[in-house]
Amino acid sequence: MNKTNLTRRQFLTAASVGTIAAAASRAIPLHAEAGKEAGKLAILGGQPVRTKSWPSWPVWDRSAEESVLSILRSGRWFRGSGNTVSQFEEKYAALLGAKRCVCTVNGTNALLTALYILDIGVGDEVIVSPYTFIATYNVVINSCALPVFADTDPETFQINPDKIEERINENTRAILPVHILGLPANMDKINAIAKKHNLKVIEDACQAWLAEWRGKKCGTVGDLGCFSFQESKHLPCGEGGALVGNDDEIMDRAFSYHNCGRPYRSVKSSNGYPIVGTNRRMTEYQAAILLSQIKRLEADTAMRVEQANYLTSRIKDIPGIVPHKLYEGTTRAVYHLYPFRYKKEHFNNVPRSKFLSALSAEGVPCSGGYGPQYKDDMIEAMLNSKNFKRSFSEARLRRYREELHYPDNDQLCQEAVWLSQNMLLTSKQDMDDIANAILKVYENRDKLA
Ligand SMILES: *Cc1c(COP(=O)(O)O)cnc(C)c1O
Image (cartoon, rainbow, N blue to C red; front, side, top):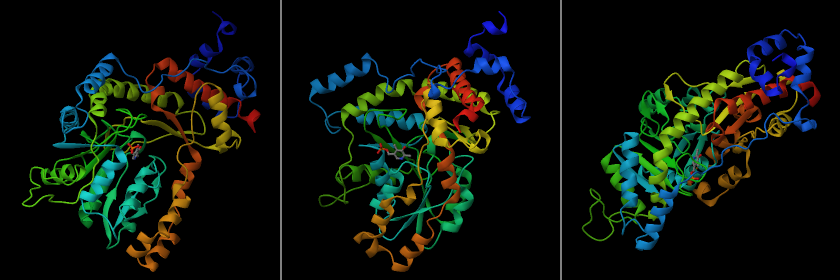
């Protein structure tokens, strides 16, 4: 087979990204024939690199259907009359190497429970990453505590551990690190800072099922860990969440609190309800779906890791494409999203939005991820709320407003590109499609300007 008989895909797969990148960086035009083969961008009317669809999500099987139906038919729908939720709690705790697990209606409520149980509330401050799903901000605000942002480390997409200490004051009670995108935050530094300043560490592991820091599962490295089982997550049941921890007394309180404040083990009562509670109980159906989903979690995770590593090896030398970095203590990153940064300087200044559209048109759906949410209206709504005006001094709230500048986060929000987790449940050929599509956009960057 001579070169002209190669299909475009074969050509691109055969061509080493490194070679093309090196050629490009020396500003040597690509081989004329290769240029023709590379073809017109799909967004400009050419053939897309890929027309095949990507795997859908969530995925389920007959065994899940049967167990949900059998719960329906049993009439035992709530955890007090069945034992499906308890079964799942035991299984999930064992899987993570945590002593205890309490399931909740969703991840947001797992986080709210963690904050409440650790007595974090009115007048307190909690250090969080600005680069996260909005729930991480909301749970702090709903607890009447101030979410104080420490700027993002754009290389890892995580909270910058070296920016935390300067945000601590006498009202700081906790650090709420997020293992965002399924990549672990720097837990060595975060735990050391927490220890030094006597702060609690609540891990938002809502995107990090089976991720690991130095061999320990994320969610078990701090004081408490919180997980989400929402439909888009790797361990999904529609809506669902869990809190994990190793301290029996705290976990007893968490259970009692999520169950209307009823007595539970060490939470004893001599007269009625011992503590103030709420109802955040998971239903039996949710747990039945989770017991089925948990069977595929390890194999799916291994597959995502394998494809993510291969994809990184394929795109790392493309000029203007900066792969994410992992901290040295990371023993497993689980890729709820696969991120890289787009440097438009290397793409003839084509704005990221155009790059995203061009890449999507090639059959590779992608997004720009989180915006600088700390600039959203909700922050002013918080600062002007009755709760916050009563809980914090005017001077504190004024200083808070003045400090709302996170340049590294802002830059990341402009440069990030995300691919979704289901795209990694595929094969090396599918990763080649992604790499080849990025490369094609790179080669045609001048036509996008
Ligand atoms: C999904 C998610 C949550 C909230 O979980 P829900 O189950 O949707 O309430 C919190 N934090 C992060 C980082 C998440 O991704």
